[in-house]
Image (tube, rainbow, N blue to C red):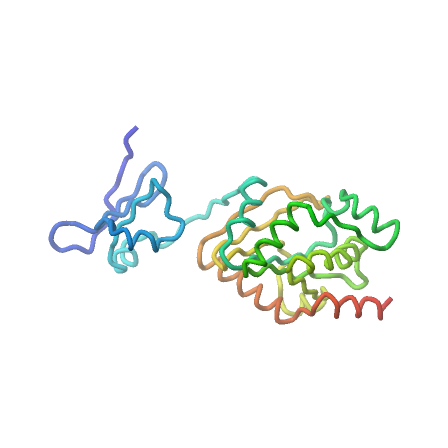
Length: 250
């Protein structure tokens, strides 16, 4: 079925190109411009698929005629697509963890072993560890800041112990007391940032189960999360320093 296109505008004074049109059905913006066909130019484009086309237009066209506001519709992805992000990120993957516990941890046999012995085992052959080791050995950075209560919950103590296994494959895990996180005005969100361009926000129910994974790529929103990341890293301490603080307080 043919699109219903509405002419949006052009900065051209002669032939009407370049121009923008809007698809009345989907809301998509159709950019009309000069095709980019040079192989060397195309090779520089990131995330350029075999069925994609590139066009060149003046910046002024988008500033003058591009949409100025939009009601953002959450983009939700399934677990498989989310897991794939940890294999395809280019240089950094970073997470803020703020919950007092996670259902997935409580269901982990390693958690039960921790409750019984005070020490968590791990299988270095698990897919997470294998992939993260491969990514960090390739020079990529993987890190987290975990917000903990005082005193920490049993789930937080489990993750504090388990963090040594994450560190063994190259993850940089740091900690922040909740009162310090509140003082720094950090949000209660749980999210991953990939390459400072894509945010995956994890939504939970009251039983600490992940319900939805929302992707955000809108630049202003991504910057907001990057500001949170920078503040969290600035105030956080290393896993070993935090573990010493917990031991001293106990």
